[in-house]
Length: 297
Ligand code: BEZ
Ligand code: FE
Image 1 (cartoon, rainbow, N blue to C red):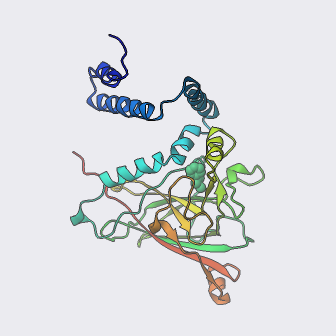
Image 2 (image 1 turned 90 degrees about the vertical axis):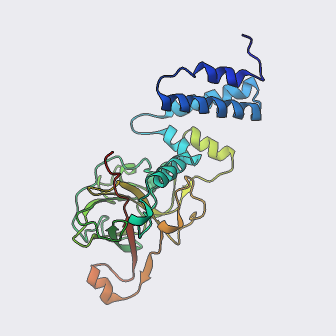
Image 3 (image 1 turned 30 degrees about the horizontal axis):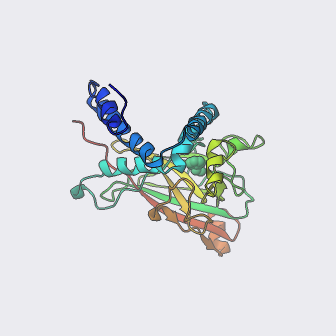
């Protein structure tokens, strides 16, 4: 059969019609339909098509077990957050079991590369002496508002200059990280510094893509969390610092208004002494609502 522009998509889709796995059959059929639709829309020249292949090849070459340029590409195209958001919608608790909306899940990012050290409530996850020392207090709840006692809360964040511990050879691994266990009321707290906004890695093809499209590479200041407890879906999420630059234009589209948290300045020496910080300090509070794990079929 000749390859004819008008019937090519149907012919290629048909070539996959015998795929035994029904999910794979659906994925391949849709891939052909949308990819052909994209090519028909853009009508790339051979040269442009070669450039696209070159770009994807560079993304592959930039990726190894330390650096995942494909995930970064997915992040800046908004695909990672779209997948997260669809998954959350599909696994939402039924309305009759839900008084609180589950906390939105967000991208993991590339800096969860070492295990966080176990910490006690109130521990300082950065050495004292930051410009904006802070206290973060959290509560872990189920969808009916019941505290999730014993939930594991894994925290990681960058410093006041936008660097994670693993990016700075002179900084001990584990700085800016902590693994906490929620108390009987689902509460945990720690002392830290208010993190800075920072750029995602721009030294690869994704950086070139952002540059070519006039996009900035910055993420607004945030703290990462993974919360886990038996009977609940593990939650990967962030808290975003409300007064951060780029809060309205996260390079990876992870901001959700319910995750924006005020780090309030507290100018009260006795309250500062009570939490063991200099005055002024900054204070943030957040609730994290987990989704129940699906019931076994
Ligand atoms: C991060 O916040 O650690 C991050 C997330 C996605 C891409 C790059 C960095
Ligand atoms: Fe981050």
